Amino acid sequence: MISRRLTFVVTIAVALALLAMPFALEAQQAGKVYRVGFLWDSPSMFPDAMEAFRRGLRDLGWIEGENIVIEYRWSEGRFDRLNDLAQELVRLKVDVIVSPRSIYTGAAKGATLTIPIVFMSHADPIGSGHLDNLARPGGNITGLSLMMTETNTKLLELFKEAVPGLSRVAVIFDPATPSHRPGLKAVEVAGPALGLRLQTVAVRSSREFDSAFSAIVRERASGVLVLSTPLFIAEAQRLAELAMKHKLPSMFGPRAHVEAGGLLSFGPDRADLWRRGAIYVDKILKGAKPADLPVQQPTKFELVVNLKTAKALGLTIPPSFLMRADHVVH
Image (cartoon, rainbow, N blue to C red; front, side, top):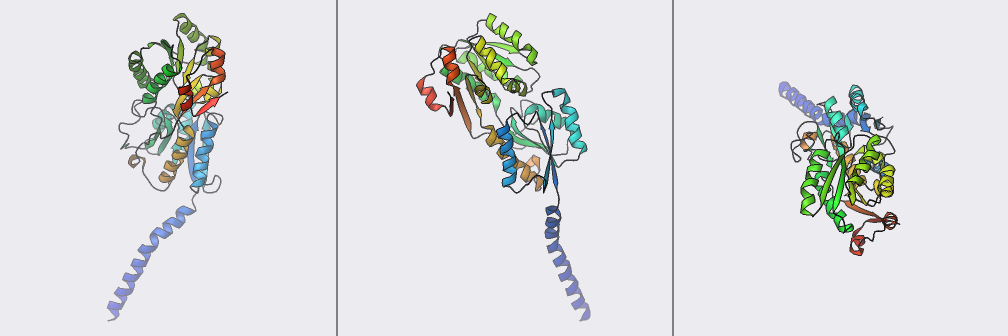
């Protein structure tokens, strides 16, 4: 009798201990301060998207300085520093690395195969070789894609629609940007189908801008399409000024270019993507594996037109095109 009672008591004690384990673990995790590595160009690049990411974390209960610390590492336009900065975050043993775009993700991938990596505006995860499958990423990398290879084709279509007289388009790209290879191929296929002749112009640094535009003018281009890369975004105003100087209509992906004086832009809403990126960081910090989180695509796009620039170029944007614009700069 005593033996049966003892067995019963032990059984109940073990059961209660097992039941208490998840709560104990939760209490332990609740007191932990997580560290997020953030590998990016500078605080001034896409500040609205940066704020959307931070706000997304706050909305999910992550407060900087309380239960989360964000270790920011800025390359400041020096891409040769990216590998060192990524390795520095690995040495800090951060819980997750946020590397918004493709070139930053490449550096993070080269630094670790175990720490989760989340990108938030990757141009082409498969085309750049960072992933083999969007639905089942595998490994330690996932996030949100800009789908720029597909979007670049749309850029040409919109450019031709906004500037009906367009016949020869110069395409500026950076050979060092992994996503530009598949993006350029897509544009080269789409151009002839739209009745456009293309001139591809490789630019590796801002020092080459002047010679690039000289080559564009020599070939009598009637417009310029600039593929998106941090280098070009950082030099948005200068690119807009060069296009204006040579009386060239210009088309870009990020709206920052149009706000700096470019003519047109079309692309995903980055602030929305970065806000959604915070959701993936939240999931990973709570135990989800990047391998099980499918890469998400943009759901919001924005078309931006600079009418001030159009007027200076002597262009009349078709009214039907303007009606579809999400934002017009006057």
